[in-house]
Image 1 (cartoon, rainbow, N blue to C red):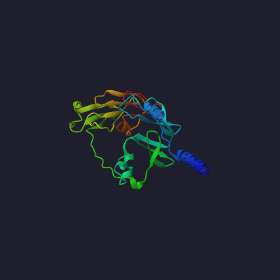
Image 2: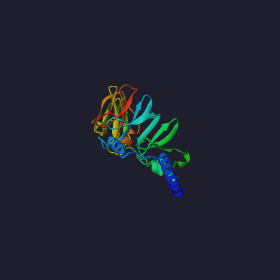
Image 3: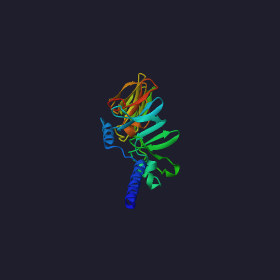
Image 4: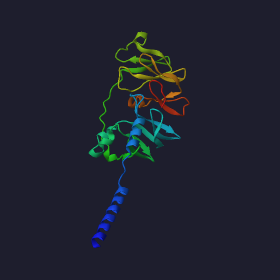
Amino acid sequence: MKNILTLLLLSFSFLFYSQIKQTTAIKAPKKNVVSTYSLDLKKINDSIPSLIPQKRDGLFGFINQHGKLMIINVYSNVGFFTEDCNLLNSPNVKVRKYGSSKYASVRLNDVDYRINQFGKRVYQFKKEDLGKCDLEFKSQLFHAYIMNSAYGIIEDSKFENPGDYRQYTIYPQYDYLHIVEGDDLKKPLIIATKNNKFGVIDINQKVIIPFEYVDVKRNYSWKLARLFEVTKDGKNYYYVDTENNAY
């Protein structure tokens, strides 16, 4: 009888321990959920990120390339899923991984974090973790040139005589021009204004983004994500790619 009672108690203890272990364990995402999420991140355009910032009701989240909301809008500011050189060069070896392009920087309640592609906040920024960025400065080959209140483009190494129209890469004829920082200095893209409308052209004046916007932001979205941040009403900004597809 004693042996039977001991066996019952052991069985009950094992069952109780198993229930506690299952309750306190961190559950991994179900395989079908992860698989579905991976399908949602499938790209239409390989040159831009899978997840793109989008602002709704004053807060930022992320959508996929199909326009589906993937990370809810709770942040006051966000960046793209790109490298963070301060973390990549951190004196704290354990946090360097959060500097990779698998993560994005976000701000919530004035606190900055890195999140993963599932939207989970995986790291909170600390000053002592930030390393130095050794950024290489590359001087632009082309610059805007103003003549008679009109903007053109010149190539510094070839331009000598403003009176010779042949020396202009783009003869002054636009209301405004701004060369966007990118990786290819020989083939830059240029934010342009004509007839009070913004668009984007290349160095040969091919229209990349049509002149239909009231503003195109002069920021790093092209360099970081191959996207331009635009608006048609001056209030609601969104991103477009070089095919003028909106996100």
